[in-house]
Amino acid sequence: MPAGPVLTVASIARVVAVTAVCAGLPTGAFAQSAAAPAPAKYPVKSVRMILAFPPGGASDFVGRLLAQRLAEIWGQSVLVDNRSGAGGNVGAEIAARAPADGYTIMLANNAILAANAALYPKLNYDPIRDFIPVTLVALQPNILVVHPSVPAASVKELIALARAKPGALNYASSGSGLAAHLAGELFTFMTQTKMVHVPYKGAGPALSDLIGGQTQLMFATATSVVPHVKAGKLRALATTGPKRSVGFEDLPTVAEAGVPGFDATSWHGIVVPSGTPRAIVEQIAAAINTALKHPELRERMLVGGAEPVGGTPEQFAAHIRAEVPRWAQVIRQSGAKPE
Image 1 (cartoon, rainbow, N blue to C red):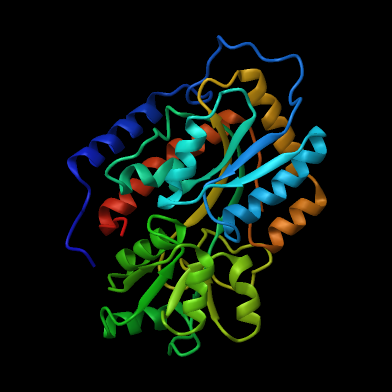
Image 2: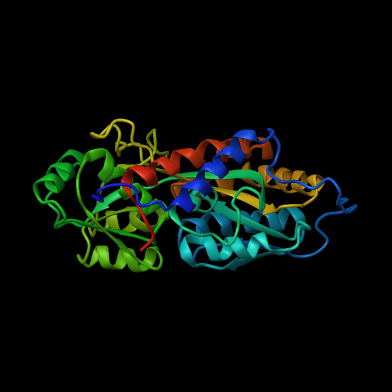
């Protein structure tokens, strides 16, 4: 474990500022513009959905399901645009600079909107001021999996092994600062163990090396690991949420399995550039809520380990306000940093 926090003075100041901005926000969206009038009809052309992560990952899975359903509701194409890099920061900057007309939306997550301000010394966008929250789309706990060669059949046995051999276990992630990384940092901090973080450029390469035995464990999405667990290539130990996941009721949570209070739930939500008219924000939110009620979409999300949520812009804004200081604390206490 790192000896202490690695946040710079600048990054600490930004986290404090972000938290202060969050605390002082009204219950509405973060940075709306009442000056720009809404068009009589929306949408009248294709809508671009920016996904700030590569194809095949959790955001891609949730985003493409949602995009397909929104296209049917709107009668307009929803074009998925994967702009990955720097823990979601590349796509987030592109979205922040897009016209505030409702024709660019982004499926953001807890990394972009809550964690990156504390993790990175500099961001080229402001996660609070540059976006308006629209709707919380889904919650997605990860699954803690280990390679079959690891002599641990439970979370308690894994903790005992890590304590007996400090630094001997490597945990893979889909990238620095992303959910799998922060879950690992939280786990090592709360269990007072030392494991080595090995970041990859995406979940695919990370899983490939885990299955090959180059790394020993990973906090991974259900969609990516379930086939490998069933094939005996990986062993599932627990889920990372505060409660057992739908479809994975036989798996205990990490909290149940020996780490009380552990919660590393990922979440995904739609945001739009600051200045987007309130009327358009409400129309997008209404369409998303309709999409999330569709039985087929709900079933496919749940099978993939994502729980559909929905709600108002105000509710999503409140969720972000609560998450910013929580993840800042995880990063500060664990000493996590981008590699």
